[in-house]
Amino acid sequence: MDQRLVIGLDSSTQSTKAIAWNADGDAVGIGRCDIAMSNPRLDCFEQDPEDWWASCETALAKCVAAIESVGFSANHIQGLAISNQRETLGFMDSEGKAAYPAILWLDERSRAEVASFSEAFGAENIHRITGRPPDLTPCLYRYVWLKQHEPEAWDNTVTFVDVQSYLVQRLCGGHYRTGWISADPMGIMDMVAHTWSQPLLDALDLDASRLPELHPPGTELGVLQKSVAQSTGLPDGMPIFAAGGDGQCAGLGTNCTSSERAYINLGTAIVSGVWSPKYLYNTSWRTELAAQGEGYIFENCLRSGAFLINWFVDQFVTHGKATSADFEKLEAAASELPVGSNGVLVQPYFSGVMDPHWDISARGVITGLSGSHTPFHVYRAIIESMTLDSVASTEEMERALGSDIEHYLAIGGGANSPLWRQMLADASGKPVRVSATIEASALGAGMIAAFGAGWYDSITEAAQAMSGRSDEVLPNPAQYERYRELLAIYSKLYNATAEINQDLVAFASRDEH
Image (cartoon, rainbow, N blue to C red; front, side, top):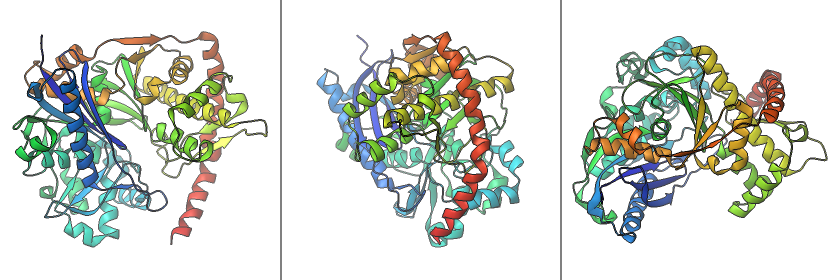
């Protein structure tokens, strides 16, 4: 019996999951721990990097305990790789402490800096170099914000870190180093040269010595320190391999290594992507380096995913943290409603919109409400809106690429919802394959670790061997026609409300001063 294991560690926005995988891609043991997030003022989201580490350490210890409970030993673990929340930026001083709280990808404080920097440097130049049009999400504009608004923190920051480089340093010691696929979401990387972009660094007055060292996926970044081995139960000297961004790792975890499949991660944000061997940039998507180290991922991203569902339920339905029973009740009631939620329509841009509008002032809209509607109608309308937006983005990508995507592969917590996955199939008219594991980001990291440990000759081979089976949900043709009608209505909503939302954002911003 093959008892070799690797760990894929997924340090996401709200929790850390450490999952031990075998060579077939089966999860043998899982450890989890939440990560605190603060919202100190309107549209600002922060974390303490110490919480990343505490959560990581706890999750790893729980994972080791889990594998030991089913007859494995920690000595069977041959390596670890990290999948991490992207576009979150930490500021570390000379003692390895935070010079300023880490600013999350959800944060919107750099709205003015997006406009000013992109005008000065050139929006087209930014897009060409980084694969991303000017937008709130990349870290690029947070560098500008920190330098302008917190100059002392800027001066005290010795290294600007992504989540992976911070955790690798805590695991292995030494300097900060990271993988390409965690560095490129920081928005200052040359996507063709696979290096930090010197023109962008010059514009920021930022020396490359203040950034993590870059490595291709699968590179050994170091080995586990003895003190960490003691606190987690992991083997002393276990190798740590370069992985990175959770979106790209999720694509790898679904074996999205060819262009006929689109993966869709129904998680905190909704992220979908298609692999391409060529570097192309287009306003219909953002371009990411692929996790296998070859080619690119053309990615659509809706910032308000499960985050929006949880916000609505917690704030307006349960008035506190919802339980699984609360969601089961909502799902059952929403499933009985017709397409279109009896006339309720939502625009899910509660945190601005990326592709295809790239409007940082876009906001959420709920329209069509009457006295006959209930929270169940709004709940269903939220899921419908996110589904319609994803379908529209995929269709725009198909038009731009001149090719059809055959099917979706759904992952993430939302893939557990029969309502949501059937809705995606019906609205797109495409089969939706549901991965046997919803933890595709952790699996993608595990695949990279398996390659690094020498189990496979390439990361692509690891993905093919470990991606496992998937169940298939077929579209209902009658429902598809109704969704086409609803999509036509939905497509009018952004233009109908964009100017109003921009005025409201400007109006509200004056209350912050």
